[in-house]
Image 1 (spheres, rainbow, N blue to C red):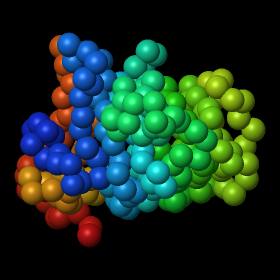
Image 2 (cartoon, rainbow, N blue to C red):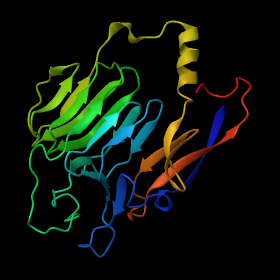
Image 3 (cartoon, helix red, strand yellow):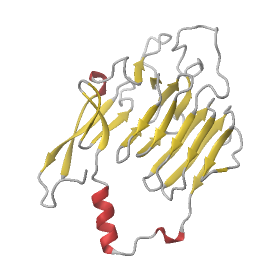
Image 4 (cartoon, one colour):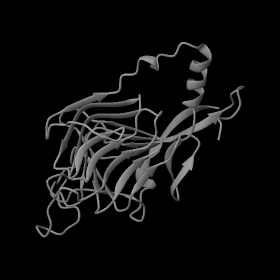
Length: 248
């Protein structure tokens, strides 16, 4: 199945009862250069699905929550517009979202962190900040894991654990990582075809009545070009492909 993308506003889909809650800063007259999401419960990206996070997005995690990736994640920030993974108690990132004033402040181990469980899907972290977690990032051995200019700071047990080994990451200093596997090059034409077909599997999207799955939709957490905050979900209208529908 081949899909043609059509974008719709994600604001029509987000509601407070769902894991991510869209909020706006009350301290600025104009829309801030970022958009904030609050994870009130742990989030899982299912196998075969991809979560795309655009530059400038801040995700705040409530106590004991986590982000588990069984599919794929693409978090690409820019200089000055980093993607931030932080605690809900951190008022320096996007303001006092939980509305408790100075009653609480950020601390290490406020939330659990990010865990990548798949060994095959592409995982991208570029220009990101991961802070105040128990373990900032934990990943299974994965030849497609790419970390570039990632800042780990104020985490509890450790910043980055890869293949069950603690990695040496300097606090607050941009960190780069990429697995090097000599046998990663595809030499068989059949393998290439299989890889291309696998890339046409379903992605994660939000349905009109809440969080759901559909054949190829990508969550884009982004801000628009005018500088105002906006989220957009890409859904895709299927057109017939002689090769048949994608595998379940």
